[in-house]
Length: 438
Image (cartoon, rainbow, N blue to C red; front, top):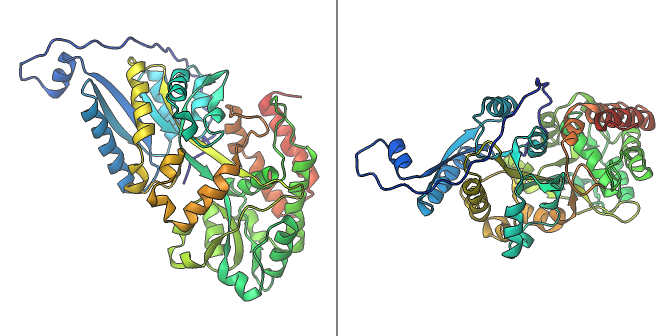
């Protein structure tokens, strides 16, 4: 599952001394029988460290290692070492490395990692990579908005390699038995949820953790809303957002959303859906794999039109970044570019649980022959937008907004039946504090 939200551990201020060295020139060959490290140094080989998060099952790591080996074979003057970095305590792992001067040259990471570390002075902009891809006609291969969403402070701080998105799933068998049609509008969604609720069953299950906040983001965006104005001013209480949150509150009042969700985590919600106690759930693209025994019963609800005609959902661009501590920035960027253009095996062989950020990769049979994935790529990815909408790109504060707990509290209060407007006002106050806006 994509890790979009940076853990909100409070870390002491880190002083980063960053420098970018020049590209090494090849030295005269050494015929002595040195160790591999000495031999590489003697030949002037540039050594790079690549830290990659765990984006899939064990085979993902093996495939990633093979890709690194392939790059090294194709680029004899560069030797990249691969480190698989677990998500547990990953934030401390990176901040400690940055502070000690041992940061990697290139890494993948959480959704807002590049923005936060750029703000700390640790990330090297990749404007030249974007320019080169644009000149080569390769930039249009990325899904619309994904590259621009990674622009901050007038610089591209990273490049997208994968996408995560939230879509609504439903139990086809439950719908058929109840004679309920798949909803196409909010009104139809509410009515369907009502008909599917009763006797301990619910039309929808929504947890109160981060996964539950994705319901809120998805519906606000589906209604043409967003937390910010186009110039990044907090606009949480705009009428489209209020309408979306009140819609969720109305479903709670109808008895269509399981009240136990106030204490649920994402896995609890999945279990409830899997047991047939909920007919609808909003999850990530690989959701069907979480319930292999009922794959044939899981359907995807096509994009629903909001009251004003919009269709949208929440989407994140998972990305790769280059660190300022790298002594070989040119080679690091070369590796980053190569990885973006050659990473199809991460899915076809490594079974990454993300979606590709490039359209040509998405055309591979691996995706096109998977009915669910193809549908999401065709119908949901193009209408996805970021947490910071209506502002066009991401920024460091989104990490805290997604992970600090304010949206989780709002979700929990909605499930508990509390006044939606008052709960929203509390969330807005927190968002303004984070953004340092009055």
